[in-house]
Image (tube, rainbow, N blue to C red):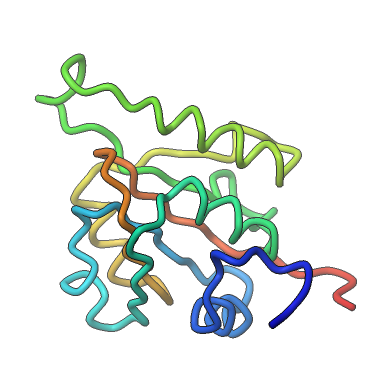
Length: 150
């Protein structure tokens, strides 16, 4: 056991986060995300029973966001036929969590078209499949440089 580490971060996930270098990316997928298909060239971890907001908060408590890109956090944007029909209140939670960990706040968050998000996910270091039931709840995070690590 360790102190100061959120309990939601499994030993496997902690290892992955430690292995990641700056600019490496990790996806936290919702329960509908095709993690095994997208993660054929990535490490795929399961976090059944956990939601994306809790995982996002825990991950951002141990890794910094990339300061050298405009949007180190990216969400899957709504498909045109879903605009106005599907609400995404979980995105507001993400904005609060990102603001807690990065001075740029919500401006650090971008949106990627669904199929482009899938293509980008295929190049990520790791995909974590959560048990999140909200739709359009997928998040891609780009790791920054760890400064003054002790």
